[in-house]
Length: 437
Image (cartoon, rainbow, N blue to C red; front, top):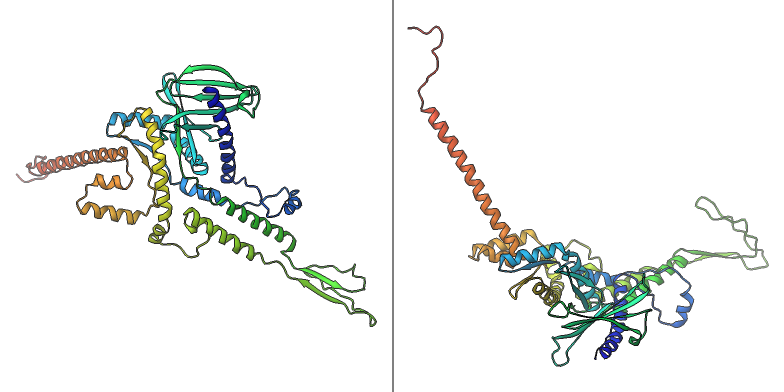
């Protein structure tokens, strides 16, 4: 069974890795220049310069920058403290961004667990190295997983199969194309009660825009080539006279000889320079198409002219915010699994930073009105993205502020009493000299 699993998993991982590598390159701006005709590819294949306008990065980062995982909240303060320690010690703020970027660009993100000195350690892994497989009859239950990596020092390829109760380790002396090249070297018990891979699923944000990105890059490249060869006016002259002495410079006056009477007269003229605005207009229209397809506000792609008001900005970003909320809801399932492994409970929830663009004045006014309506302040703060840690810290600060104000008031009262007591005392000083008896 394991050999069949290895064969199937290795073949599937190779395909997944190719797709993931392709998408990640587009996300990072490493995009090939595509041509509509093979002959054009042959002509321009000698060029070592590429011109890229990377809108794929904008599509991913506009969502990624709003998917900020801040940890977890649990009603139990003890559990909350444990989860906060894991979040800080294992630098999950950094790991979460890498996982989310992989998930948004490829549809899959992975976090692997290991047990080191009795403590659970978490490591983000690339979808180019890790794949998981689910049961046919229960698609929500993971059946096994695989990780493959190449050790450049040992020049060996390793493969691990992860099952709920065991971990099988394989190796191959090269980078094999078939799973038959792997030989099993160890089988050990799985220290976890589950497959130690957390799978983060997300909507692949690049699936429908890569071809449009190719078209933009082609236009961009064409524009730069045109700018190099035809962005300046080119002059021409028809004459039989010797013009080798003619020079063109800003301060020179060119003396152009005329033709003789028995031949065509001398003619001069110029070719028009290419209009590069045509390329820019086409690129803007394609970028606008990417905005519509990806549900990213158009002002991320094209210049809108005048400044955008706060209310208009909120309305324009509504589709993006909805997209971020959907992605966060899906990714939260993976982070909830992580919390359970770190000591959390089914009451533990994922904390996300505020998805919407912050408008301080509008937000403060809205929160103030909600409190005036009778909604508890803590409820209002929760609705606006505050976590339990932040709320508890606010309550603690308010208690300290009350104590400080009470101390100040007490000191002021004591000072007032002392002044009052001093003013009621009879004069007890020495009589002035020269006083009449």
